[in-house]
Image (cartoon, rainbow, N blue to C red; front, side, top):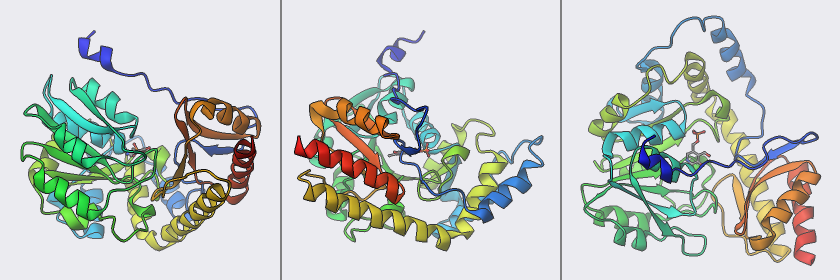
Length: 348
Ligand SMILES: Cc1ncc(COP(=O)(O)O)c(C=O)c1O
């Protein structure tokens, strides 16, 4: 086996199935069932899955370009955000190059970096926030790519445009900055930049978006990057052939058409997020402002215990033993179960 695989952490998703589980709040999925209009398109498309999809996904690329007001040459797609992140890494990283990211952040960063043969440089969070100054200091001549997760998974915090502008201005030109905006649609603070709008002309910034979260297509696997044409071209070259299925492509296009309906769902999730955060803070938990569809609870040494209490109540959350638990905002009754468990923990 390649020696670089020794550094690949094995993804440990925790318990993913429970006999009596009724609430999945562990993977930051959208808890709403697929939109009927999108489901209809998927059903109709299913009749032809004996055929390969369009290898270049031209229709989807054009649909995304139109929706986000960019040129098709700025867009490249892949089978989910994780795949697009891997395509970006494969586009710029050679064996032994360095990839910088904050830690703790999205669990795929260390895995994908190591699989591509890169050295991973983890920069500790400052509280719940990414420390962009320290990340800048961590860049060397060998650094090829930096992940900025905005908002950050699992803490939910986001960096504002002042900090991000300064970071991007000062980062050396040989470094590709991947601005991971998987949760962009849940952002409400006006000072958090929309990466596509703000950094579209920067040749060293690639913005990642996914259809898995706000659009509710996690199981279909489709995502994209908006980047400089040279970067987008390279990302197309590193894609797995036929990696975005016709089902995913048509569902993504139907979802773009259903933007208003989806926005109403996102708004409901944001409202629940704020209700939960308010309740948790009233219980005494120091919950940071989240701009995503989840909240981070610093349960420290009691994280596993908290996780078990949730499981007993039929709820799956994502626990990071010794650190905290990430709770995906779900439907109101499920959120209330977690709130009552948190209240019990706060009291004891
Ligand atoms: C920060 C971040 N980026 C990217 C992704 C990729 O999501 P997907 O592969 O479902 O598109 C996720 C999923 O959890 C995430 O949390």
